[in-house]
Length: 210
Length: 210
DNA sequence: AACTCATTGACCGGGGTGGTCTACGATGTT
DNA sequence: AACATCGTAGACCACCCCGGTCAATGAGTT
Image (tube, rainbow over all chains, first blue to last red; front, side):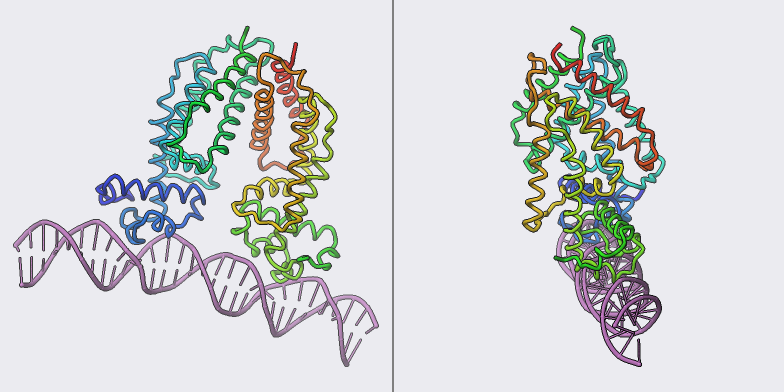
């Protein structure tokens, strides 16, 4: 399987240190350019150990993808309530969950956000499937069971969807830029949510029926 | 100055081939990782010539930045009409200019879009100044001389600005993804502009006063 | 023929690569 | 006390690519 029992027997803390070091290195450099030397250095372990725990660089990478997909799926996407037909409300709640999950798993999210842009992504079948499941779930969240009659009827609903999505995306990117470098666990999120809600209210005011 | 007369005496075509090869390599890899070997290979010149034209890698990089800043400034930003107080109309025209300029100078724009994200950007003073002028101009385009009374008065105007900007940004990114790999000079842009206008109309309908 | 100069690519020392292997100390077993 | 096992470290390997140099070449000019 490419990963040894030895690694899984390590105490939680050390496992985490190694995984985070690797996630960060791959996220910042992509697969080819990521350096195993850098990983062991920032994980604080000897070079030999990395190849004792994982058979080689590629297996480590695949393990990280599997690990990241699990977290994104079970700690983020599956937590989003897909039953609320009010699109903006759904997005609002999704934003909260995403933020919380991101703060708790920053390295994982950072990594996940980059590996799907990799040029050549020939994954083993099980990973490819997991990947597609995740995509399907993402699609459901955006499109499934949305009450389209809530939107104003003098404009194309699909285009309004896009604008709302772009606005959320834009806010998220802006926020990331603003918070860059800060410790995500010690931030006071109240003013952020307040501001976020104001944006959501404007979207409702402008795009929902009167 | 880091660049020899020899280079400037080259016929236009060859200069362009070299500059484009270099722009592409730096854009794709950043300064540190860009390979001069790759540049000469894809420019179709001998290794020695690159260091005959430009004294070294760093000088070449600075020359490219200077070159790119000029094009962005004089072929893009300065072409935008800053007098129209109608924000969305201004954005609409700016979008057209940007697209046209991008199609004609794809490598330059691609390069310009990445070098401002470089980690360590300690540029020589003249370049730094040019950079700031460009920023100032960009700021003017977005904020200067906009008639704020055209917007609905039941929502914060600055937030509406943001949403409009995010929408434009989103559309642009989407478009780039859709057109990726295609030859930008042979595309029929009519349906694209039509779609773009529809989005702009929705923004007007939703955010302007009745 | 002598000189100038644009051009090439083999070559240089240096540094980083993924991966291996030996040596070692701790722990447990006989 | 002798031996075996196992988690650990890091020196080491062959390889590859780097930015930059330089001797050789050939075309043009005087």
